[in-house]
Image (cartoon, rainbow, N blue to C red; front, top):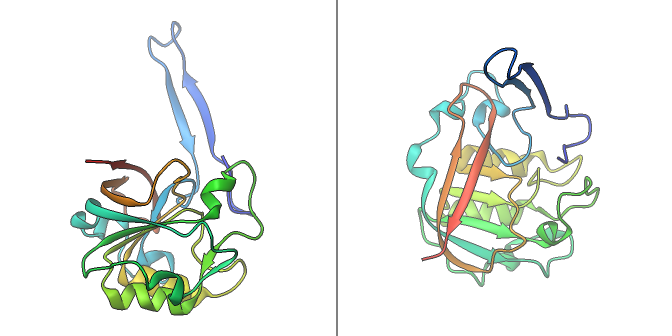
Length: 191
């Protein structure tokens, strides 16, 4: 599994084994922002809401997948203006990040710029999904992440390679824990 540089890699250690212990059980160790995950306001500021405080209605509903594979490096407002967004929408952004896969960490992944983040927030997007481990520029643009976390429920690390642009039912369930981020299982259902 690809992890952001400097973050811990996942580890699975078996501490009980059949037949000796009558069961197989393991300890899982991973960062709260590993793989597909959701972020909370606690990620940016102490004393803020944790994953357990995120609104349940942000984890399920109709969603729109927007194909932005043609964008080379930075997503700007004009890249989003052709898509129809309504207040309360769940929006997933598919970029070339998905086509490159999660084989090794991408140093130059596609990311959002501030004008795009502001556009999504002003349009009233309630949940935003993105196809990489971060939505902001590598080593910069922290305000992009901040405006999105403060105004949407943000899912990162989505794998959208085989997903076509269109409307789906979104189900994204993170572990309900009092922390800054949590692993999540996200599925899309085409109706």
